[in-house]
Image (cartoon, rainbow, N blue to C red):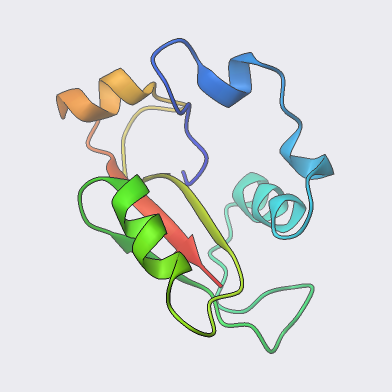
Length: 105
C-alpha cells in the first residue's frame, strides 16, 4: 500500500484530503492503489516511467530524488506491509512489516 497514514494521528487521511482531486500524479496513484495495480509507466503520460524505492526515511529519499534532473513527480508512503492503513508510529515500530517508500516519475 503506497498511501498510508502519514502521522500517528492519521495525518492527511484524518484531515480528509481527497487524493483523487489533487494534481497529477495524485488521482493516478489513488486509482492504481484501489485497483491493486503497480504502475510501470504513467497512465496519463506513458512517456513517464514509474519506479518505487524503499530505503529508510522516505522524506530523505524524496528530497534526494526531487533534485535529480528529469524527475517529474514524487510521492511518499508505505509498501509491503500486513496492516491496512497503518499509522506512521506503527510503521516506525517495525510491527507492521511496512517499509517507507517513494514513487518516482
